[in-house]
Structure formats: C-alpha cells, structure tokens
Image (cartoon, rainbow, N blue to C red; front, top):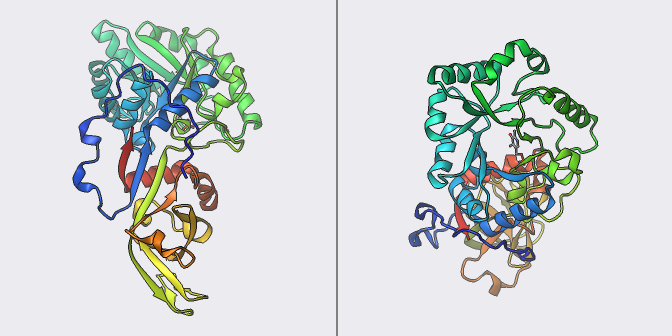
Length: 388
Ligand SMILES: *Cc1c(COP(=O)(O)O)cnc(C)c1O
C-alpha cells in the first residue's frame, strides 16, 4: 500500500545509523505498537525541497527529537543526503547533533535557553538569540574573551514570541557597540500565517524584514519554513528552515506536492472473537448492529493515537479498511474484521493506523489540531523502527 513512487536520492556520504538506534533482534515479534520511520522518504523529501528552493541552502529543523521521530537516525540520514545545517531546540539537542556531525552547522532556536555563552562556544553551536538581553550577554562574554562570537539573531516581524522588536532594531546607538563582538551568521524570522499564503500578515512581515535589515550587519537571511519553499522566490531569501516537509507533513492549507509521509503507525492483533448482534463493546459501549468478528489490537492513546481516530477514520489490514469499535483505550483498540477473509487474519497480522495511504492530515483536521501535534505525541509514545 505504501506508495514507492518517489526517487531515492543518491547518497554522497555513507549512511551510518548509530547501532543504538537499530532495532535489536529480540524486540522483533513483540506485540506492541510500532512507528516505522522511512529514512529514504526523509531524504527524498529533502531532495524535493532542494529542487524547489531558489535561495542558497535548504537546512533541516530537527527540534523536539526530530518532531518525535528520533533525532539521531534522522540527522544521520540527512547527513548522508548532503544536509550540513541543523536547527534544534536547545544546547542539549545541539550536543546530540554535534556528536554525529562534527562539521555541521547547528543552531538552537530557543536561543541560550538559560545556558552560558561559553557552553555554545565550546560545542561550536550557534544560538539564535531571542532577545536584546541575550545579545548583551553574548557580547559581554565575547568582549571579555577578546573574540567575536558567532550568533544568529531572531527578528520579531509580527509573530511575537521571540526576537528583537522593530523598536529595538531601530535604536542603532544602542546596538552599534554590540556588533563588533557578534559575528552574525544569519538573520532569522518566522511567519505567523505560514499556513495561509494569501494572509495579509505575511506581506507585512516580509516588508518589515527587508526594511529593518537595511543598515544592519550583512548576513544570510532565513524566513521560509516548509510552506515558504512552495511560495514564489521573493519569499525564499537565503536559507530555508525545513522541518515538517522532511517528514512528509503538510503545513499549509494549500496542498504541497511531492512530499512523502515517512511514518507508518501499526499494531498487532492480540486476539480475535465473535460476538452476537446487540453486544456492547469497549469503554465506549458501542452496540453491535450485526453479528461481528472483532480483533483486538495492541495500540492506543498512550501511543499518541487520539481518541477521535475511532470516530472518524479507518485503520487498514492488508488492503482492507476496517472500522474501530468501542473507543480507543490506553494501549488497546478493537477493529471490526467481520468482512475480512479469515485467511487474511492468520498469524496475527498488523493493523495500520497511519501511513502514506492513511496520512496524518485528515486525522489532525478531525482533532482540530496541527498534524505535528499528533506526530510528536505518536513519536514520543511509540517504539520506533528505522527503515534505511
Ligand atoms: C519549527 C520551526 C520551523 C520549521 O517549521 P516547519 O513548518 O515544520 O518546516 C522553522 N522555524 C522556526 C522558528 C520554527 O520554530
């Protein structure tokens, strides 16, 4: 069922997944939910972003443990595909990237996040400074050390949240003494309406960014996240910070072509039983309207599978779509297999809940949340297996 139509990128480097992240033989056959992560799909999506982006470089956002998919295998795979720049949350994640990628450029999107500037220097990690206070702290460290410290600087062009405000940026008398201590590697800003290309707020942010950068130290500019790569080139600037698209997750109300979901969430059947019409099943007490054969699957909301799944979506066994029955419990879910050929149920087959054929987006829509809300929860709650 998983579409395999994408081209796997040729690897310029050897792909090395740390042994700690390979499935050990003894876990095979354990009846628990699993999340297969298709690293070839991640690389294919990276190549697709490179084809579309007109700026200088496509870089990878692997924050929050690569959106729950596992930072180390994703970074190892992207390195093999030629990616040389990674954005993480904080210094702890940065050190994990550094351990795999001694030569990569690593940025922390949460700035210093309470850590000392010297810790970033030692690890050669570049903080994306999020406030004037952070700029001053790094400049003071740099002045004392007699060096200029590499930094990126976030600019708040409209989202709020993080970065220098327009007012702060216009106070040149205050900023100018800082520049000789700061080696600005990138200017960073993020769009509030990245999911809605036609929203007027985007134009306002674009306008502010170009206005405000005039007269500031020259450095590459990074505005586009995944969705921005699909917008016309005036939105691209120099560096694209791409997360969701690498994992095949849609982030825009306008469909983004060419992305392959890299995830596959499945569980194994633990037991099959026949019930008479009228029986009520599960915590939800679903009443059977016909005599039914019901399979119980080892998967549930502890694996990040939202309870709404049962109300609006199907799972799949082989090529057959099956309905859930009785609600989704912590780690058990029942599915109706009455219409299936019994031979297709031999050997405790796996039941697929999400993959390229059953993508995250409709489920996220039903749950009224962003697909990444589900992906990070599923990744954190489920044993992951990597397909190279
Ligand atoms: C998470 C994040 C990104 C990546 O966004 P995607 O839509 O997942 O590509 C880019 N920039 C910043 C500042 C982010 O926090």
